[in-house]
Amino acid sequence: MDYPIVVEPEGVKIRTEKMEVDKLYYCIYQEKILLFYKEQNEMLNCYEIAEKDVVEEVKQSKSEDIEKILQKYIEKKNLG
Image 1 (cartoon, rainbow, N blue to C red):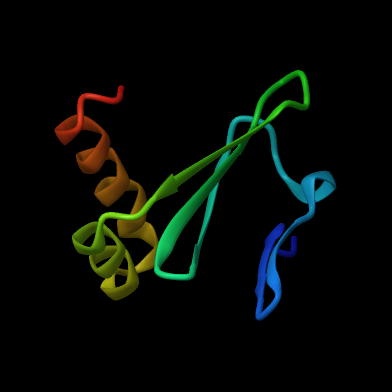
Image 2 (image 1 turned 90 degrees about the vertical axis):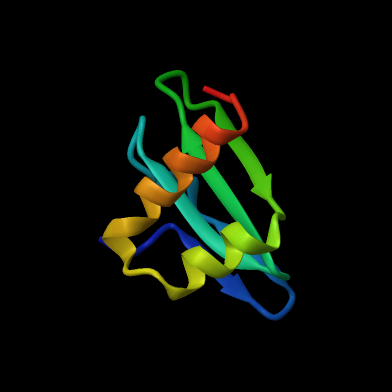
């Protein structure tokens, strides 16, 4: 399946019809991490992380490490 988040020079395109429910998707756009999550009722949630150290860590990581980085960030900020 194609990744439902596409970054283009003019912005981010979200193809919600290609998103799985309860799965986290992300991209990096304008030096920010954008997170997208589609709920059971088709509601789309969007979050932005702009902390430079987290953005750099995600840029340099392997894709399987990104959820661990984000989880560590959430715990550090007491967002969970």
